[in-house]
Length: 325
Ligand SMILES: Nc1ncnc2c1ncn2[C@@H]1O[C@H](COP(=O)(O)OP(=O)(O)OP(=O)(O)O)[C@@H](O)[C@H]1O
Image (cartoon, rainbow, N blue to C red; front, side, top):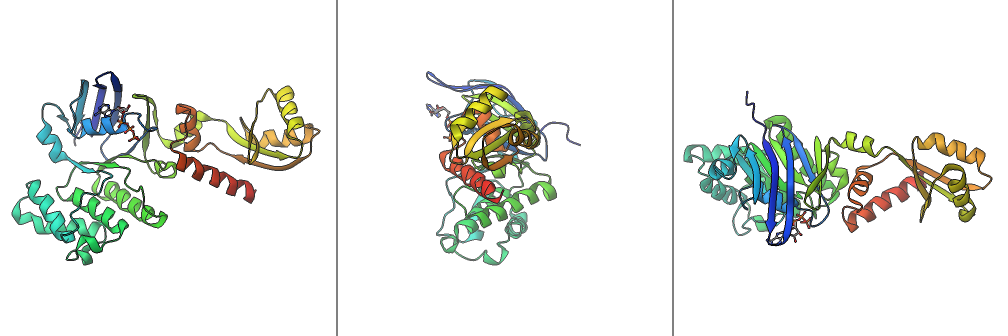
């Protein structure tokens, strides 16, 4: 039994001159959790991760990783963590096996164990049969899997992943997630990751949202969505001005005009639209109701869409949903 949490952060702050990048952040990640760290650009995610990984000294606060104090025992912390950053750092003039071997040597994996560790890590990401191939012959997805394998060679207890699936096609993203879930389910590894894909954030056991250097929410995806509460309703009509008046006067709602029609949020959207259609003397040509998504949670908490690209993806999903309905 190891009673210490995988990550413990208390009142963590980081200042760069006048910029307060991280302002009194606290959270705990338990062993074996997949923890998502989300926030808009410039929110303080990278700064926090760098402090957790011993790459940046905190201005103040307490940071414990696998039971070790990050500032007092950085070497123990480095041995306990694996880090997979966004920028590819494989040497593509070497083979898959050579890349991993280099890492094993740097991390002091005993010589007698190296071969077995390499084979285990490569098998885990399904690259065992490519171990003798040069990395430059690998696809983007294979390189990403190899980076994950490399992060596993020294058997870290906590793996940090900065946007592990950015730039990968949907199929490869799915395969990468299967590998990540396998690490948690089979090895009990703790994963701490950032992502800009809200559908992927759904895979996390818990999520912390950081904005302007502060944690603004921390809970499971389900609980966060419940907290946003209201359903999102889209109503199409050929008389939008008249319907706007009805919604405002009768129900106290201020709808937004969107490409999908008038949009507003209400509790129990389905019951509401039944009432609306029977009560409003305005012809309604289409209706869509959807439960809050993590995109809505993010928007409600930070006032921003997580990233423009993702906002478009969210809108596309909504359009598809509206079309289906
Ligand atoms: N070395 C530095 N010197 C000065 N300011 C910095 C430095 N590093 C980060 N900052 C500032 O700290 C704030 C937080 O930056 P950080 O990189 O942690 O955000 P982020 O949430 O990771 O953003 P992104 O999603 O864009 O990567 C920003 O205002 C950034 O400009």
